[in-house]
Length: 466
Image 1 (cartoon, rainbow, N blue to C red):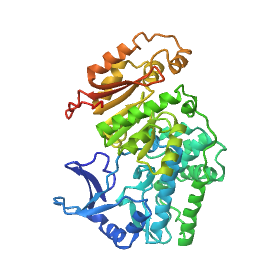
Image 2 (image 1 turned 90 degrees about the vertical axis):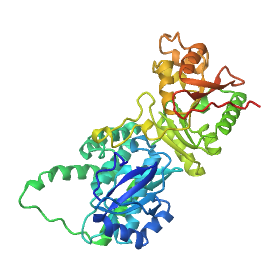
Image 3 (image 1 turned 60 degrees about the vertical axis):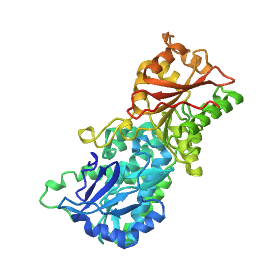
């Protein structure tokens, strides 16, 4: 089955067979692929940890356009730029430029600079598109420069200088943030990097927008190889110089202000670790992960964890910690009340989160009160959605008299008559089978371990309480 988002490049495409990922490389790309593999560029990039590895496989080629088929390393969880923290976005930009710079030494360039071509493994960015390379031609400008500015420089400069949430514009503009829009939003911010690559670039693009209609077109001044390399090195320095200012967000310091006692916090960790060991999930989604404290318990027990949180600063802290420890965690920005949708042509180029992966387990810790009270989501709707996308659910019930719930209720009328332990259990036990429930000693909160009734592969699992 051909991947619905792999259709723009005539050089080849991604497809699946028996849930195995393959990439077909077409005849028009044969010379570039052969050079990539034989020149030593492929080995160098894989060695540097910035390019996904693959192996060539024997596969029946019924397509007359096909040259060969490769089997790339599988990425645990596909993510998109509007879900990345600032640090992840910056690392993705630098990886793209460094790959491009390395390719020149082997007689090639990156013909594509799409942010969607970068994915993360253990908080490390990797290029996943084997078809992104082309031959370097002396004198020619970088064909992907404009795309790099739209996909990387504009979002980074806007996040750093205007508002960290402006990376969400990538959800609207699938081919990157238009430079004229970025220029208007930045105004005089962003220094020389913004002036050169956003403001001037936008004006030049507007000035030459109709050049294709003219009979006489000015020839582009040839760029020497030394100048070409200098431009790339300049872009690397420019991206390295973009820094996030000191920003405080609502939940960035959650764990320093939480009402957990030391006893309660320790007990919560013990229960969670015990349950994770019992159910042995390979993939875990941690909703409301904050800085990833509990995500790391799942990762330390062998799971690949995608740690979602609405707070971009909390996600940034989680990402920076993941870079240091190389833990198998992917921190992503996500609003659960408006999760990443399917977008692009026919709404199929980029998938919604629930169509990218069905996790074995979802953790929703200290989250239910935010969904039910802050966002007026009924327990029944939360339960129904979660039961359709995960096999196991570890969820924490936070009672109404909890200080965190009382904080939420100070600014709104208490219309939440159904927000009770009985109401919670009644709603979730329509869609889930209860495996275990454990009160968190030192608090009034309770952890529940559930099994979805709706998934076809559901098992009758009995937790050993010994």
